[in-house]
Length: 111
Length: 110
Image 1 (cartoon, each protein chain N blue to C red):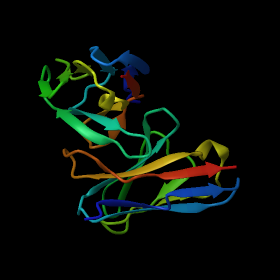
Image 2: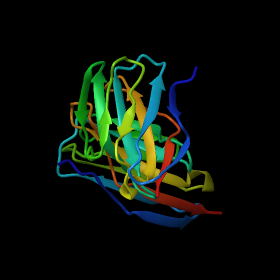
Image 3: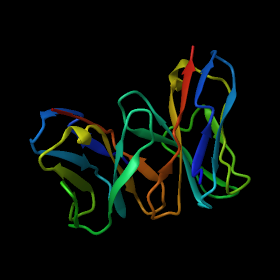
């Protein structure tokens, strides 16, 4: 039972490059979330989705885009990477009132 | 903008001591969750509190939700080195948009 799978685990980008962080779940959860976590800090919500075809901004959406074409997948797109986007990115899923289930994160460095 | 402030930010204590971590907001939450995070991993749920004034116990951990549902506390009795980690509160305002607190990093020394 995979749960929430994030790929890649690590990535180094040059300033201005683009990339997509993948998140796939096999838990059939409607709600999916993307968070970023800077060293030693809490999590900041980037975008979230309450179901396929529906997405909404979180606390820090600038510089990111998302899509939710299926229940299982919720990719996060960085179009023009900047050093300020160096962080650990976590994808999470839930059913609403249930606890959030997190992936193991993607560590991104932009230089 | 909803904000969840946690205090203290850092805490280093000796094994056997008691401690309390606070999670405060000016916003009302329909529920609040506490998570613990180990290095290199995602947060893992400890407890969910829903009712104002609710108290829940998980072994040596006691969680309380404020009467007005704007704040919460986590109390650890007789801390052990295994309690070391980053403690995070997360609030749900009713729209399932979970906002996390600023985090409390706890280190328990043997």
